[in-house]
Length: 151
Image 1 (spheres, rainbow, N blue to C red):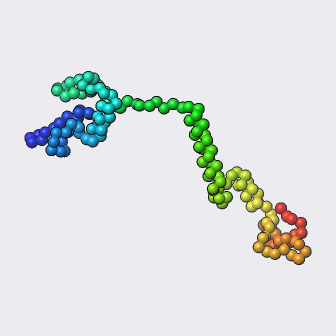
Image 2: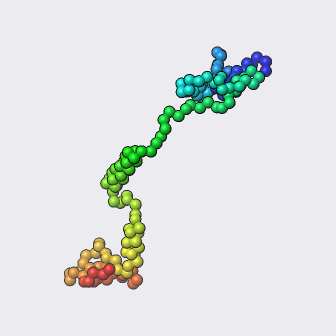
Image 3: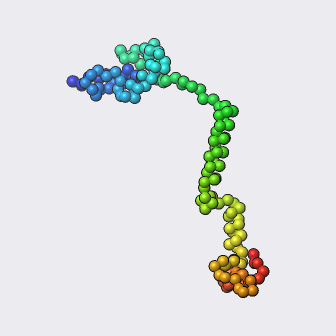
């Protein structure tokens, strides 16, 4: 290890080889940032709760920034969340075209009923002169006319 000089990080206390010319206190930018936040929130020195082993300061615990605000649930907050959710659903319902809306169980039931029916009304064929409407028979595969509406 000739010519290499190792430093000890003032935050995590690990040995590191400096990457800059001047004296570095921290091994990386995240340790530097964490140390800054620790100093700003705690105003306590790490040396009070640290031990010295072979001349190196070792903390008893890893310093973490203290929580600044306790999150609590409130009735007003729940009401605001419910109102926002209802407003978003209303806007979504209003501006979504009918073709893009999801199918419901009732829609699927109606579709299966229509597919299972024997007679289907043909709309692109003109009715007869006596008023009989054209229907397609699903069993015989023929076009029939009926005055009575078939279902």
